[in-house]
Amino acid sequence: MPEAAAHVASGKVREIYALDDERLLLVASDRISTFDVVLPTEIPDKGRVLTGLSGFWFARTRPLVANHLLGLRADGRSTECRRLAMLPLECVVRGYLSGSGWKDYRATGNVCGHALPAGLVESAQLPEPIFTPSTKAQEGHDENIDRARAVELVGEERFQEVERVSLELYRFASDYAAARGIVLADTKLEFGLDADGTLVLADEAFTPDSSRFWPAEEYTPGGPQPSFDKQFVRDYCESLGWEKTPPGPELPDEVVAGTRARYVEAFETLTGIGFDAYLADPEVVLR
Ligand code: Q0Z
Image 1: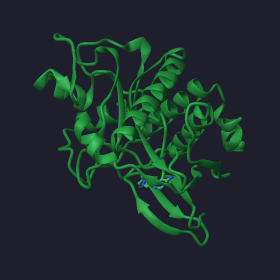
Image 2: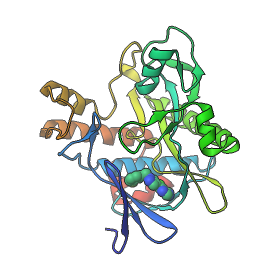
Image 3: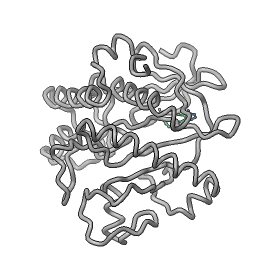
Image 4: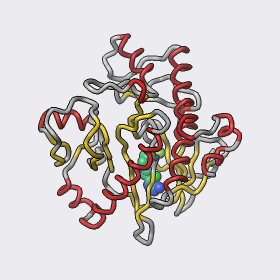
């Protein structure tokens, strides 16, 4: 537990505490959201899986860009990190056409100012990955923005840097995942600046909560793809005819167990590390 740490912020499924002026503690709960609603039932170890996966990627991408990670706590769900000045930009990279990217393409033929070929279907792989930044909405969904708006927010030089680094990170992680049978369709990265003005990757990286993971074996463009982790939850919620407004439904034990198994499978498939080994010593993912 964060002894004398002050609570700084809450996300839907995570909390931030201040350890001191320079360090934060990110704690990933076992809460799960679907259709933007946090459900009353938790998925045991979900927060540990996401924390371990983020740590794994932070360790492996350090040669590409500095990151905020200082260490993982023995509880497996808490990340000690450097406190940064966060950029007011969600750095999204898309290799496939899904979610708001697909919506925008269908409506306008382009995504965040990237003109795309005509005739693409939902979930199609793009000719090459594109950088499609958005702004953090206080309420509701992030808003996709074009290059000019992003440059207004962070400046031309910093924009060029986050675009280049985001694309490099996506290429690295998506190649890595593809070799293990997982399509990393898209991802949302967050960056901050340290006291020197150095760009630093922060928050979480390449987790199923910040990226779309699709099982490569089932990939079939032309419609929405089943999600690696949340599909049992979505299917169950759909089967109830729930209106997708709070409160969300309780999940039955078999949906909880199936979903937990999917998270653990994603962890083990991507890291090549047994989840038991992670629980015994979380920092195993950093080595
Ligand atoms: C991340 C968020 C969460 C709610 C602030 N290294 C950092 N330095 C400064 N600020 C942040 C970070 Cl990671 C920071 N968020 C997103 C995370 C709960 C909101 F766990 N907000």
